[in-house]
Length: 303
Image (cartoon, rainbow, N blue to C red; front, side, top):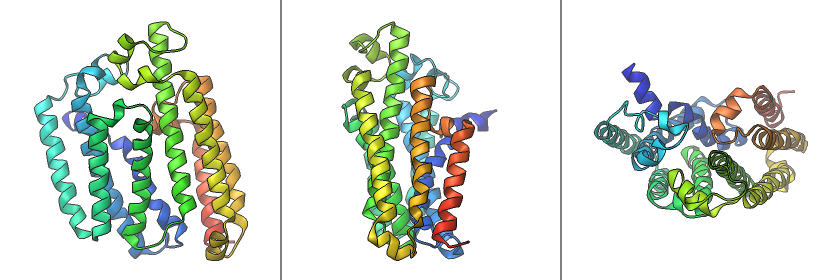
């Protein structure tokens, strides 16, 4: 079906990543305020279309590389299901829609959306081939989403929350690179380092990573997530705003989520597709649901 092919092209299933714009809404105690919710929902829609345009651009740039990838070769562009010229038209139309939609927001939000698009275009053409800057670019994209959610409803956002977002996105980015590297090494029959030839068939930047280096970065990023979130939950400003110290009790869910993700990557090698992993693993799903419920109950004093 043609519509399904285009939905795969713009990666609708990846829109869940834009849920980060709802973080400020949740922690600003305005989750049940319809006016605030609709503003953040509008911001979410803008970022969904913006990210879809970026995905199409990235697929156009990587079309030859993706043809050699055992999984990505089945995407609409590398598989030839959608011609490049139609993909270019699709990306252009979506970007035009984004420019129109974001004009209904204030200047700060517009600047963040423009920055998000510019950052990801640079990532598609350049940054993804530079070691470390590739994962930091991914992390910056998630941080922009959180800030945009705050600007959409004009609420302050905790620095600890921004740091937590940065570390969790760094963690997911590093784990994705590790999974890609493992796939390359398995296909090439090597044990420790991707060669230049193998790296050129997938991501060039993988030539500059090793499993040991990726493991160390993942450990540091995971520790950063846990420490920053724990400090956020007991920070004087947090306790003062929520008038409770109970947010600390949500920390175990964050720790479990990090450890579960690491388990699925190290034992099962499933870290390449973050969205699919979280959406298909029962324990991850339950952990996220229970965390959200517990956070809402504590912040909004429902009991």
